[in-house]
Image 1 (cartoon, rainbow, N blue to C red):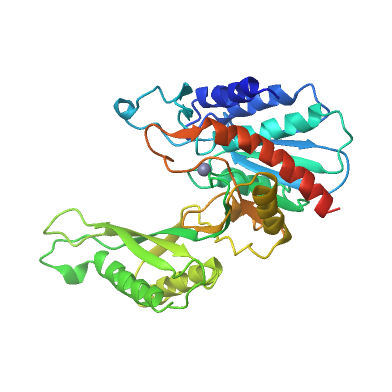
Image 2: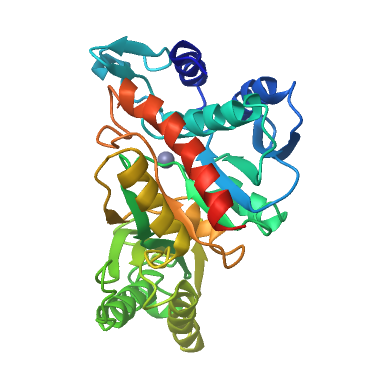
Amino acid sequence: MDKKRALRILSDLIAIDSANDHESLVADYLTNLFKNYPVNIERVTYAPGRDNLVVTMGNHGPLLGFSGHEDVVSAGDLANWQFPPFEATIKDGKLYGRGASDMKSGLAAMVVAMLDLLDSGQELPGRIRLLASVGEETGEYGAAQLVKEGYAKDLVGLIVGEPSHFNIRVTHKGVIDYYVTSKGVCVHSSTPEKGQNAIMPLIAFAQKAQDLMASHTKKDPVLGSLTHVISQIQGGSQINSVPDHAWLSGNIRTTPVYPNEQIYQELEQIVAQLNEQGAQLEISYSFPEVPLPNQENTKLARLAKQVVNQEFNLPCEYTAGTGATDSSEYIQAGTFPIIILGPAAGTTDHQPNEYVAVDDYLLGCQLYQALAKRFWTEYQ
Ligand SMILES: [Zn+2]
């Protein structure tokens, strides 16, 4: 595909305001690009206006997954943008716009690679499935839905096109955001024996959770320690009333050393113990994500590094991330390897004046195509 059309596709995607919603517009646009090709297009609706898109090409051979999210984060204060966020602007070799880096450039490059392979007119020795997800930025629930509905189970390998600047992110931490609510009985503070103070058991919970998580000192060799922060606490409504409600939230960044399942059990055990002593605590979670175990020793990570090094003459390191990606969902779908490899540098993600270097994006289009071909050969 010529550069102009490849840039047009990225620019068109950026022009769609899919900030935490309206991903169906992205799915519509991509569907239109593929509609005259012999591919299988499936829409997987998460909510009205929010469609995941699955495009599968090829008839036989190993199935490589391409993962990209359709949503972007909000543009924030427009006054901080040099150019309009939902209108791609190219200046001095950089393409600016919301999602230019995270990650409409990765998504567009994957789509361009697929279109180029389809246009080659050759019989392809393998298959590609594009998994374009909703809601990655607000909880990876689109990818979770795709996994639940079986779209990832027959993958042989998966490339997530998040910004990595041609390095290969092979592992990242997981996240557990939790909330604990506490109920009590409100009475006049001069007769506290008639009521039940909601704040005190919550303090007990906070102390026990803090001590227990701090006792988890074993480190993952790359990701380091699990971290835990009690990040919010509120309760009561008046200085001379016994409080009948209180809540707190906590954020845990998990590693494979202490699997998420273990952490849930431990937190729930603290709640159960305190409830046995008369507390009325309840715990809930907001879109928890498991860590991505280290993929460095997989064939996929090795061959991707070779392609970047040898076919593109670029430096390429295995790296680790602190934030979760759709990988946290796809890793639960099977035993296939997952790597995170994208063209954008990622230095301006979630910021005003987000950009991707035009050359990096165009190189990404080539790279994904080369990777697919190499994958098909190695995994035959
Ligand atoms: Zn992203």
